[in-house]
Image (cartoon, rainbow, N blue to C red; front, side):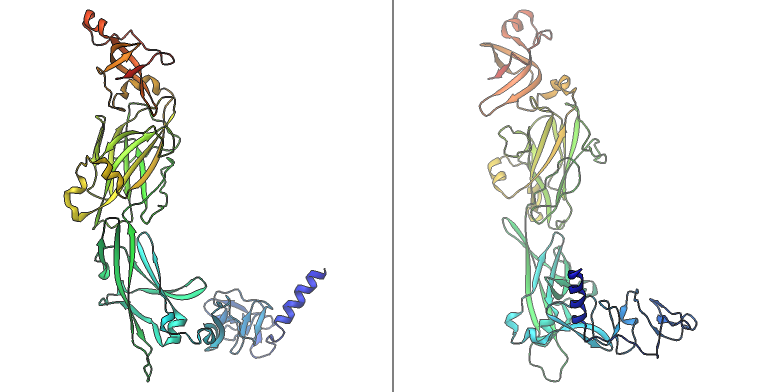
Length: 470
């Protein structure tokens, strides 16, 4: 009870100077003859005569300045129409509440900016995925003699290019303008180097209309730089994930060749069936770039640095026979058709794709094969990942694994110290030192004496016998 009393006392002391309206003209809305109410359109008026205004004891309309008569302001802390100028919501720390045309208004606190000069003018620039946002302080510009409402891009008077708006950023009231990240848009100038793309423009801010002019208009350049790469991680929920760099990328897997039926997180994929990988970016400048997939590989874990990496796209092109790179380096999306495979002892396969944003100035170089793998990987690249859950029956379809590593039926292998011919692959196991293939084989003697490449009845037990590729 003591704490409650202290809080109430503090509130009374804080608003001790505020006096609630207690007059008779206009009448209180609670008056029995008035029976008034408040509305968004008409403010507060009597129910018996809507042309007659009244003063409420509660103000539940959006524009609270319409609740009180001239010289009074709604104070939600008391609550009533009070003679104390009260702003709701409260003003920022660099502002003060003042009566402007009988409306409680947050205005710049001049004392906060005393001694400030043009050297203190520091615009804020936010480089977002698809827009650049330039913001300037309203109060500082006003104090220095500038008109923040008179701001526009240099040499561009188009209305669509010069839409600006007030907002609050870091407890400061600013005037902001958005620009689309696109080459040539409203005077944007784009340049590219080996790792970044730059978008540059210029902003003009005019001066206040005064008889004595003491300042010149402001003109300054601003530049947003974006990496030519992005990084996303998709745990096969097939939902876009925010990029760790400046562009958003998505890697998805689909069931059908027209890329319209995505594989869901709880779906399983049988080994040997085709899946369709789509890698794309939404917010990059399509007039300036295309998306080029440099390489894709699979691992048994979600670690992209796992030593067990099985490549199926390298240098921008298919690395194995069961892969088709259907589209790459021609737009802001890439499409890859892959025959699904299994890694020994794993029920999931994690697929990683590294890609770059390729400047259109390079022409058809963006969609050509690049056999210099080290050069491609050394460049800036995006890495995206998905997880494929394999069907429990996939082991019986694993004979279609021959493309996973460059191992095919008919390749020479070593079995129990004797040369053998691989017939059908059932599974593979890879380590940092060697590659082990499980499957059917025929040794050289049988192949010669029986004239067969494969003896289908000869089966290598997965748990005990292996073929080591020579």
